[in-house]
Length: 599
Image 1 (cartoon, rainbow, N blue to C red):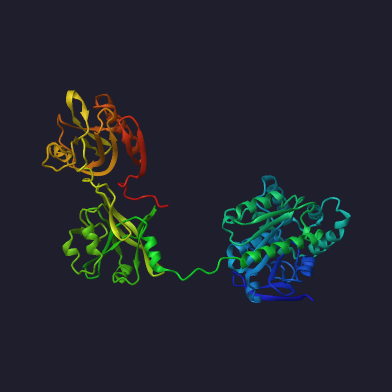
Image 2: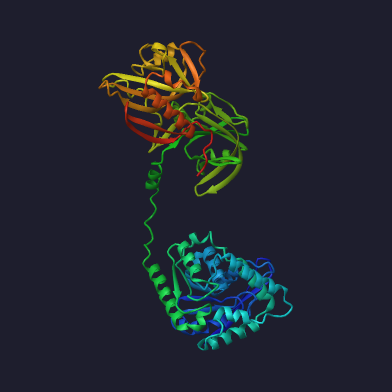
């Protein structure tokens, strides 16, 4: 015997509301949601058969049967809220949710918003992303409904759902539907139909996030909830499937109840089996292993600093730093709640992030301690927002506090950048508990056997430094080794002699001379720290004015052409090969930009 009842709740406007329902059977719960103009009794065949195995609840949709009207500005979430109130009121768990037509839209809204409450969702004869012709047709029906002074005649509806003429075998089902349409509340119908007419694309962007087993099923001959629609939804929703019932139309739960019930029972069983075979709960979380895994991520090293209320500077070493937004310019750092600095930075109105240069590992170590005289042992100044800025860092950002967010055992401190600057120095890295130098060691080739040429491509504001060579040729600064400033044969000595002050950064090319076996050329790319005085020996030449025909040889021309191209793309690589052929291994974007676009 079916039980008829209702639960009461408050809708989003605070008004009292009720959801009427019919309930029958025992077992896992199944919730049935009908379409526009119908009510719970339309599921009579499903209630009869499914209740032999399940606790079946058929709800009257808002605006229908014994349920209250939806708000005047009805939303899909209003109908989903009624389902949630019913499920909570009845204490249901792991529900198989089945919706037909408008009920399918409501069921998908619920499944996307409350997936933990469901075992599965079935969207039966659902509409999805109507064609322009279909949108125009339903817009005309909606306009006629809202303009009419009298209730609809329903003849066109019966034709769409059953065909014209209605097959004799479907005449009883058509009569049942017609009687339910005649009994519908006109206000509830109009509010619901308006939502149904305009919500066919409501879940297009959300279906890829559906996380419960889903069945999209429709009739082969349904002209409005077409097979193409069900197939499209199944393609978007992970782990779902579509089924097309031959020779059926829109009201197939009435015209083919045995076939529909069989398919529903099979789908429920499959969803339940999947839950039983889900992996067991994972073992206890290993925090130590988690920390080690995180340590595999190569990061930069920063010192985060602020001024306390008494004007004294406070700072700590951190590698949990990232950009957040370019407009407005936001960055973040993370601070452990157990850190002694956490209370200070949580209430600080401003703070700085200092990205350390690779020569500043000692500063990293200093600010990782609880030493009281950190800033007495480090040169610093105030930034534009008033925060401490350390000298000689690779880059700095002075920020005012934008937002503080609690996240587990840390707080996330988001700052709006009020000022920043950067230098050509290589940044200091950190990985697996140790500092890492991003640039290749400049001494790494000093002891290499055989003949060697070590040179540099030095840039200043998109101009390359060239030096005078033999016979009026132009060349890059180079030497027989990297060497020191006092060795005139080394690159460092040659640069010192010419008055070139530069920072050598990353390796750019390594190649052998085919005509001189054993001879290796190594070139770095770097930045001029000062613009040299103009002279016959030194020339600063813009990219677009490089005299290619005056360069020493084809190897230098080829290398500089690649540099100019990669500089324009801001993606550099390292060439490895010989003077005639080799490969370029791509690295990453130039590290000189002040802020990177966040992913």
